[in-house]
Image 1: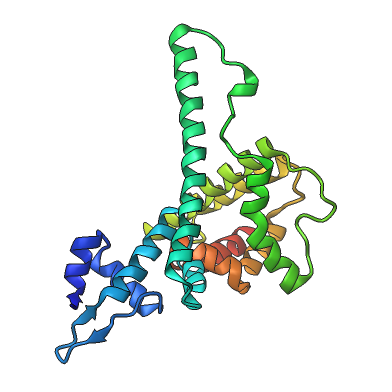
Image 2: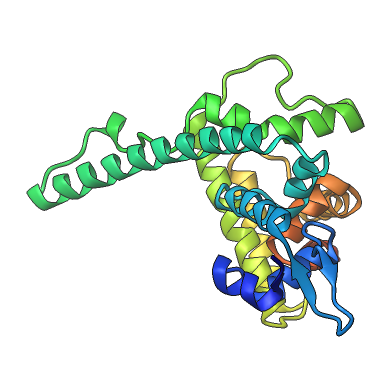
Length: 248
């Protein structure tokens, strides 16, 4: 039985616009297109969509999902792998919820929570190594640069703080792009300057020039450009142009 794009949208909760985008980028093609031009999806396409949505729940970017599914892996094996990833996420969320409950309980009692309990669940060294592994493999294979060289331990609280800053900065830049703010405008320049100040305060030898060079690298490198573009279409280009404008 074949389903129209609207029927697939209704049953999956994925918007028609998103389904069209998935088709456009080669992530999910319809089984066939009718003489009238309607996209039609069969059982196989619905199963692939389910796999895509499992990966989206795990925050995988679309380009990465496309790579993972390109080899048409065994469905049962893939579901088993996705289940393990979701279980790991659930365990981490449960740890975070316990930390939140304990924090709320301490606040209600007017007590100070033990410092070593305040950040339970906010990532571990092994989680950070896993999170960085794909990027590290790309950098080693393409540029011969190893993020993990020397095997020095990861400062988890520092990494958490820097990740939070990076996420907030990229979200603000994406919002500036969506709202039509000029890349060379004062508001965007201040966002970049505040971010550079944060980086310098956390031990990075960064100025407007080196930051602009880094953004140009992100734009030229397929892996990093895809990461940015999966967050907001055009973000890699907007960021590079804004950083160049800030550097003068």
